[in-house]
Image (cartoon, rainbow, N blue to C red; front, side, top):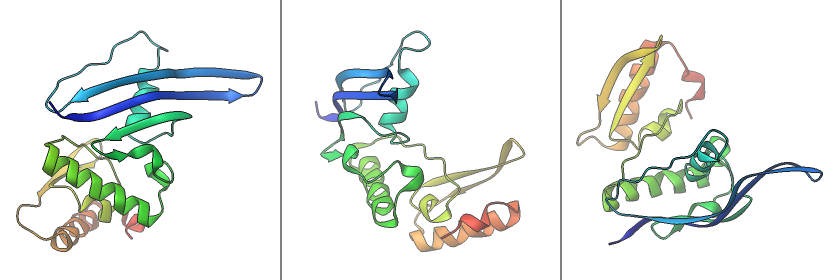
Length: 162
């Protein structure tokens, strides 16, 4: 089988020089394409920290995480603060992972440009689903405009549009 995910000696430390917490300590594993893998452990065992590292919400202290051939630990910063070049590189990687590897990707964003890379968008308002868009055969630019139209109806987050 093909590896979809490879985690190599990943470590994540928090704290100061005098008080270090090893939230993730030399974790290594692979997930094969099409595999259904669970991660279990008691509270405080590092599950959420590992998930944050795998999703690039947080950065590894040491080690590497590969999606296919892409080392996501080499990206400039966590996705919430990526420069435009790195953000576009990450979004293109997500598209390739979805199309070529059949990866399931769930992305949460307030940025219409980033959302335009998706195939389907669920819009939330007041704690519920307000609207749904499906890209279908539309170009990314057409889908972006459709997303902007819906954002105008929700009355929210239009300041975040690039």
